[in-house]
Length: 229
Image (cartoon, rainbow, N blue to C red):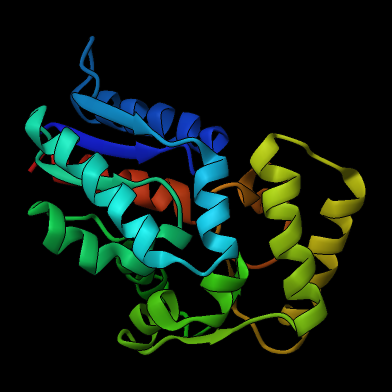
């Protein structure tokens, strides 16, 4: 089994889910008392948020590269960035660290393609929804991406950081997210990507009448596959 290096704390809430999902995935494949060989480097989320707000991705890259170097020196064979937004710097981080970075959007695109869906709604931070580091991976696989309107994008972005990233779950926020999802479905979305690793804390597949793609689960499964091949 290959050792995985998890870069977490972005946020700590979803990092716990990654640890759980990866260990469950390994055990499902191998049985018995077999679980993941992994190392976690967890950031102070406030430092990341400060860089995000300043649009200082070079500072984030420096932090991720240093964390990745620690994980590499400790024996990690691949890096798992436990957040969608941080994949904005995934390629640069991979080059700086010298280890493969298992890309969340590549894994998600493969999952959507396996369902033969062509038009997908995407929820996430404004970075994930508005920049092309995620949607370009979908486009490369013939998948068209829809995003909410500007006001809804801002609401989703704010609640990810101010509520979900702190583990706060509010019924009124869930209702707003579901309304946004229903609007995208009405406009032709064949499925919905929960493109922030905290959104599944709020929205479950049973809440949505079309296929839901939980990027944290998809990403964790890709990490399991890497570890066992």
